Length: 283
Ligand SMILES: [Fe+2]
Ligand SMILES: [Fe+2]
Image (cartoon, rainbow, N blue to C red; front, top):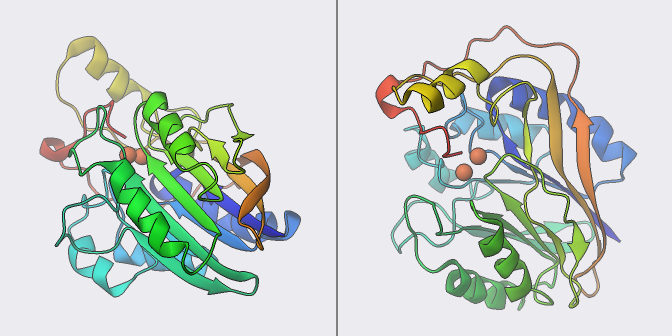
């Protein structure tokens, strides 16, 4: 049996500190073989840096996935081609830096990971995610049946469609982007584990990981504002998937909803540029 721990969007310094602090005991407690985290909001809520990627990999993460915020930190354009374990959505046009999939060797055989971005209510609108992932899955299945897909999207319907589209072809389809964990974990008819959204690793008293007041005021006033990452208690959200590594079929999926470590760090967040602040609904 192969046990995969998948954690949803890491938000800012509170989120990444909590993930790094909790990974050793989560790994031991659940006999985890392979860890995937979505890091698209790990740097001050916007994107990820090379240093943060390395910190996560050193903490035991095997693959870092991303999404629509992948390019928010400038150093990632040059870094991503030096670190194949950092993925960007696979359905970017040809020529984009980085890769959308990887196959890694483990003690229990090869594991493939694919990161794909949905199109409904998402920017930028990328190539057809279904066709892109279909081609990638066919290629990876020549090497291994153990494949995990991070489907990064806003709408439940598009992500559920992706689950059914890949049912029987991959081990798990796990959603990210909304930062809100769904309660629909299941194993589809063909043996693919599915969860519409893994949730986030970030501050609980927040709006999607950002401080409540500025985002609430933005909705009330329609005026631009900066959206700092919130402080306070953190929860780690995600999923644990058990896989029969001989067939690639999922045996079990359970949601992860774990507390972060009690202590908050005083490390300052990267300054957020007002002009570049995301709209509150874009995570
Ligand atoms: Fe996102
Ligand atoms: Fe996100």
